[in-house]
Structure formats: structure tokens, C-alpha cells
Image 1 (cartoon, rainbow, N blue to C red):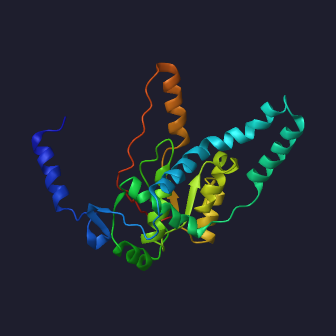
Image 2: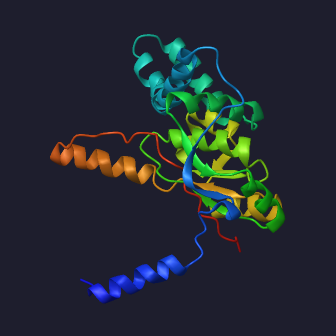
Image 3: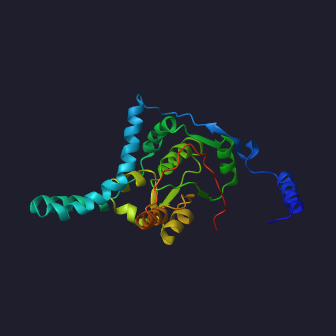
Length: 244
């Protein structure tokens, strides 16, 4: 343990430092309630949207494996489903700008707050450099990614760039469509370098994901722990660094 004198010294050093979470740096030290430019007429629509985003992580695998089970009862239907899955998994999907605005309907049902001010977008434009933006937390179902797409498109349009995800998610029907609507792609090094160096796009990452799911499921099977989901009412923390 540190001695009391060392602790006090470190506290004084922290107080003397110029903190980045200030309005002059574009980040407010207090949380700000997000206000949507696009609002649905009913909260039920927002909950249906959340259900679709969440269910997409299960619909994709179910569709991929469905031909195996259908084949026993109806081979022709299984063949049709197999061809449909191939089309849904491989046909190209383009980013859909309006989809980011639709994600704003999540603000109200999750009581979403953030710590960004409009000045942050002006700072990003002025610096004219690529950034790696890390968002936390990820959670097993990364609804924070949809929230980030909405808030970044709304407040930081000049920083909106390329999101990285596991390649497995990019072949799952329905899920790959939702992800690529938000400009999410592969985490392969060459793909990321191409997006950042050739296309000049910032990189977005939610640390965790597959590792969190695998670890939680393993612990659940071995020890019978209870899985819980963290509430979404959390601020987005931005960690920006110059990309080499």
C-alpha cells in the first residue's frame, strides 16, 4: 500500500493537471441528456427496434443452421433456405445513413446521457488527423454500438468513420445488415489500414465482445453463475489517439 504522503502528493498532481474532460476540450465534466432529432411516434416502436437489434444475434445462427433440421422433413425447403442463407450472408450491403438517425429512438427508453459538447466536433475538424475512438462498455449484446452510431452521427459527423467487428458477425444474416448499415466491417489489419490510410476514416472499437460472451458462457456452464446485463444509462467515454 502507498504511504499517506505519497497518496496526497498524487492527489495534488492530479489537481494541478489540465483535465481533458472540460468544455474547452469539447468534453463536459458533467453528463448531458441526449435529445433526439428523430423521434418515433410511440415508445413501442423503440422497443421493437431494440428487440430486432438484440434478436439479430440469435436470428442469424438460427437461419444458418435451419437447413440441417428442415432437411429431414422437407429437403426442397431446406435447399431453398440454404440458397437464401448464402444470398443473405454474401451479397454486398452498403452503409445506410438514415439508419444512424433511426438509432436515436433509443435515447428516451434508455435515458441516454453523454459527455460531449458541440465544440468537440469543431476540434476534430481543426486537428485534421485520424483517431481511434474506444467506447465502453461493450456488454454481451452491444446496444452501445447503436447508441454510438446515433450520437456520433448527430453531434460528431466529421468523426464518423469505420467500425471494427469480428468476421463471424459479418456472415450472419440480419445481423450483418444492421452492422454494415452503420459502416461496420472486418477487424483484419489490412482492412483497417485500408479504411484509415486510403479512405481517411477514423476507427471505432468497443473492446470486448466475443471474448466476453465466451468467458461468461464458460463460467456459466462450469460454475452456474447468474448472467446479468448492465444498465445502458452510462456515459460514453472517448479515448482519442493519433493513428500511425
